[in-house]
Amino acid sequence: MIQPTKIDGGLSGEGFRFGIVVSRFNSFITERLLQGAVDALERGGAASKDVDVIHVPGAFELPLAAKKLAVTGRYDTLIAIGCVLRGETAHYDYVCSETSRGLQLAQMDTGVPVMFCVLTCDTLEQAIDRAGLKGGNKGFEAGLGAIEMAQLSRKLRGSSKSFSATGKGRRK
Ligand code: INI
Image (cartoon, rainbow, N blue to C red; front, side, top):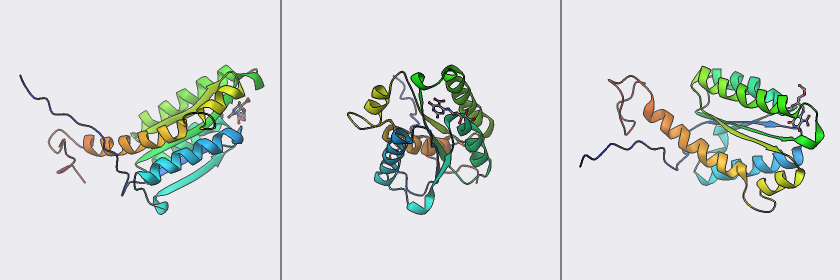
């Protein structure tokens, strides 16, 4: 049986640069998601100087801020944090769909991974559950994912000639 080459991201965030863009809307939730994301990056070995946090008014503003950060070339991975609650807006569906579409476009247009950490919940209760106040923290998951994607992007960078499953020999 052949032994396929497996290419995975690792768990060390050392030496990578991360940008976190956070919505102020529903900050009771988003600041907790932010704490979770920073905690994961810190545990992964990321340095303070390599993690920037940028606040925007609401989830709808996340995509533009993410794209502007991505094109600077400064960041290996971005994390977008927001919380949209159905109960509080008639335009819930527009905010959710445009935010997710915009963030996907930002990463596809620039090649910089953007972790989607935008809670879209029917109730505050559901958001609380996902922000680490009762159970898991989706921000922490996004932080771990950001490290994995930073490593994976580095390994997958370059042409087939310079490509290497270990990341060595990639085009600088
Ligand atoms: N923005 C959010 O991040 N979450 C929400 O629940 C929300 N609601 O309920 O309206 C929300 N609206 C603001 C929106 O993201 C924009 O900031 C605003 O429309 C200005 O462009």
